[in-house]
Amino acid sequence: RVAPGHLVWRGTLDEGRKPRTGRRAEEEPTITAVLPLITAEDLAERAQGCPKGMHARQWAHERDIRRVVRLVKAGLDNPGGRLLLSLSELSMLLNRSMPTVRSCILDHFERTGEILLIKGYVLDQGGSPTHKGVILRLYEKGVSPPDIARMTSHSLKAVDRYIADYERMKVLLRKGLTIPEISHALGRGVRTLLQYQEIVLQFHPDLGLAPQED
Image 1: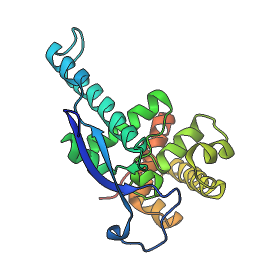
Image 2: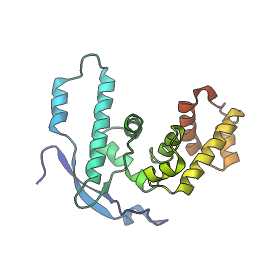
Image 3: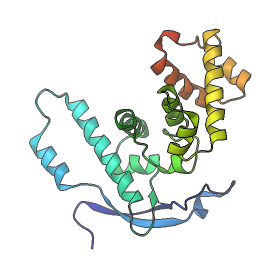
Image 4: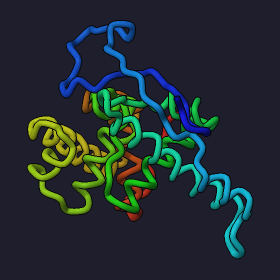
C-alpha cells in the first residue's frame, strides 16, 4: 500500500561502485522505491499561496528545490537499496525542464554545501551538473584536493586532473583565447570548457568572457 501523493518508481540501483566501461543502460541493475512526490506540506503551501514580499517565480523555484532534494534523498534512503534518480527522471517526475532541475541541484549545493547524489554524479557521467562543477567550486572555496576527493568520492588523481585543466583554462582565458582555441589546446570538449568558464566567471568576474568565434 502506498500513501496518497507517493509514487512507485523503478530505477537504477546504486551498487556502490562505478559501472564497467561499455555497460549498456538496459544492463544496469534496478530497484523499486516509493517516492514522496506530493506531501501534505506541499498542499498546505499551495493553499496559502505565495508569501507576501516574495516574487512568485522565486517562490516556485524554492518549492522545486525542496521537492528535488526530497525525491533524491527518498531514493537514497530506500530500504531495499539505494535508488539513483537521473536528471531526466527528476525532470519527468516534477514536470520541469532539465535546466531547471540542474539549477535546483546547483542552488542547493551553493546554499548548503550538500551534494545531491543523482545518478550522473554517482556513476561519474559527464553530463551531471554536480560532477566536475562541484569539485571545482569546492576548490575555488579553498577546500584541499584530498578533502575534495573524500567529500565527492572521487580519486585524488581525478580531482587533480580536473583542477589542472581548470587552471590551464584560466591562463588561456587571460591570454584572450576563445573556447574553441582552448578546446584544441587542452584536448577537452567545448561543452566541458563552457562549464568551466561558468565557474571561472562566478569566482573571477574580473577575468571577463573570452571572445567567441562565430
